[in-house]
Amino acid sequence: MLSISTDRTSPPASVTTYGLLGLIPFLAPPLVSWVVPDWGPFASRLLALYGGLILSFLGGARWGLANARPAAPAGVITLSMLPTLVGLALLLLPADMRRFQMVGLAAALAAQWLWDIKAAGVPGWYPWLRSVLSAGAIIGLLAGAAAAAA
Image 1 (cartoon, rainbow, N blue to C red):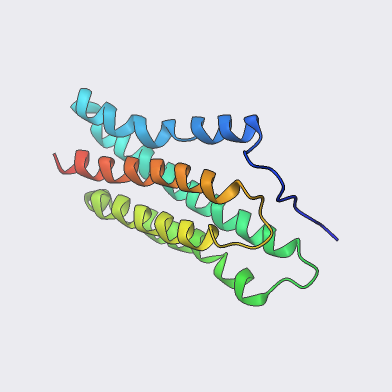
Image 2 (image 1 turned 180 degrees about the horizontal axis):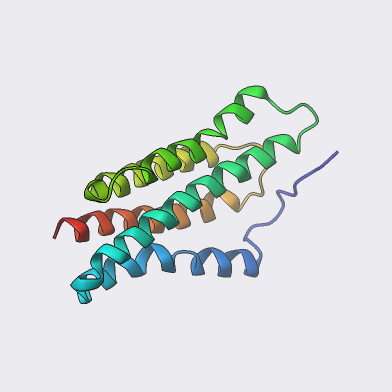
């Protein structure tokens, strides 16, 4: 039986480092859009694509966590597939809906965050780290939506 340790008070350094580095693709595109407006459309597309990929990744992580249990709950397995489908639906929107796309991705990441911080069987530090990373991602997506509107 898989047992996930919950006795850590802080995440492993590699997890924190890679998690924080993963915020660069969320935070750099809005900045690029404001500093070099000609690159705005490319930066917005990059931000939306990365947001959709991360949303799908988080759903997959939740799916894997549920399947690590002896009797994987069918409801969790089903719900953990939604982030990929929502991300795909948002990414299929046309470029002229980029702001809506980014706000939708931010909302989906917020919903995933609310679900994940209550997950059973995760290390004690996980809700804190997910909160920090989700906040950074959501801020980046909303800043990207604002930059796309400018």
